[in-house]
Length: 119
Image 1 (cartoon, rainbow, N blue to C red):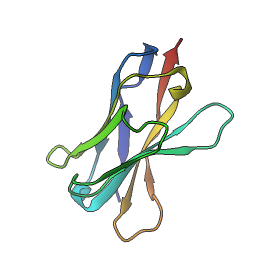
Image 2 (cartoon, helix red, strand yellow; image 1 turned 135 degrees about the vertical axis):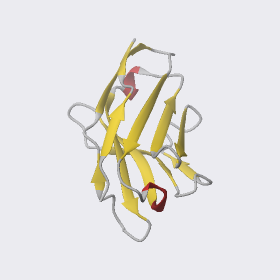
Image 3 (cartoon, rainbow, N blue to C red; image 1 turned 180 degrees about the vertical axis):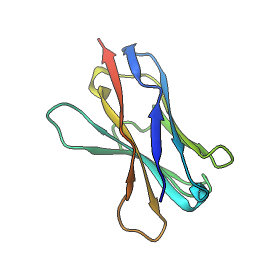
């Protein structure tokens, strides 16, 4: 079991940057695949990025590729999402998520943090 708490959201102008953090409780953080999803008003939750247990492999949605970077610090039980060149369409609630490596779905979710990009 792991509990996830996001921080770092806020209001930023288009073209700006934000860094989201997700702090995880528990002693097994390094055993979890971690990811970020987002949900805009009136839309379904969508995948943003994922990172493997060691941090050596990452994968991104096409909509954020080249602008967002996911990373993790297993010593600090934290996963990050660096967001650059933000666009108004990036406005959403961003959720940190994690799963056991053998699980087919994300089992653990944070409460979400709001990111608003003004034009």
